[in-house]
Image: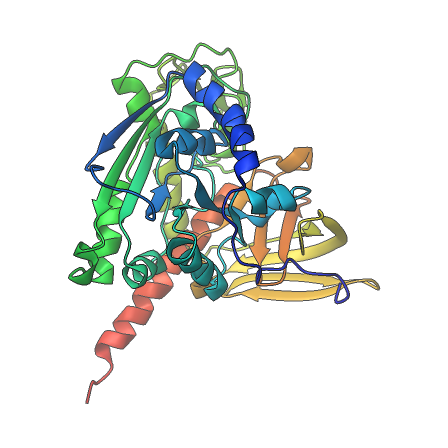
Length: 420
């Protein structure tokens, strides 16, 4: 592993090559036209490149909606390293800037600054850093406000609607759903001088609020696909009736518990209704937040713990994944410990709670199973649990809630520490 060439993060970003622009539009615009995509522009008068555009993240179609929103201007795009696999030349030449997920990277900030100042480009950032799991906004990094204040450029938010519904991460079969997006300048470069980092983050977080299932109901968007609930158990893994975890399942338009046999039916407008019991959650994101609260209870009680054998793959560069064999993954109040001990590879990776404010997970990733990934500056390790099933959503909750609790402890200690 030490001899393997790593991804070169030192290369400066490129302006989109003119001869690739027609290809970009050919790939993006037909779909957004067919989906009758509407971009509502707010406070955008006089906004011209360079500026920063922060985008909500739902599905692959996000990039196509973004292309329509900023038309006819090109951009530099922050893209995770798995997006560069087998197409590094193409991604670099359309303005892609590579990033490993949930890793602090000063080089990325320098590349963003270079794109704005030297290339005079729009810089597109997806700060949620993964597709929305349940059609609601995810946690944003606190460092985002600090970077924006330092850069001093107009900040635009592209809040998209319908994208998650059209291809939810738990069921990648496309549905026919019209798309919308609100493109809003939320902060001008002049305003940044007088705003604190906390105020900047507050403005951005409020602009990022979305709820796809509420939007679906409010706009009477009907999804008639017979399999519209299939895969939903990947996210809604805990039964609110018997409180058993990882025994939820789904088929067609039904979500059900294998333990207590309660069955929920998903309507054409995205609501849930129990068919053989009293409905506890009709709004899908409410069930999701119930699970979060349950994980927090475990953390506070000191009962949360996860460990399992895992199959591990590495992604050191854009050439593809390397199979490292089996290892062991542990997660508790001390964070993650990922280990491999075999004749070919040795690894001990510790990710403490305050180094991860969230976690990137995948459902049935390339048909290889559910997984989570942990990154260093030089590598990304994909771990596939071998004996425990449907556990990655809970792991993501645990990471986020553990980070919040540890940050609260840290702030309380800082507040009680004498200043003189």
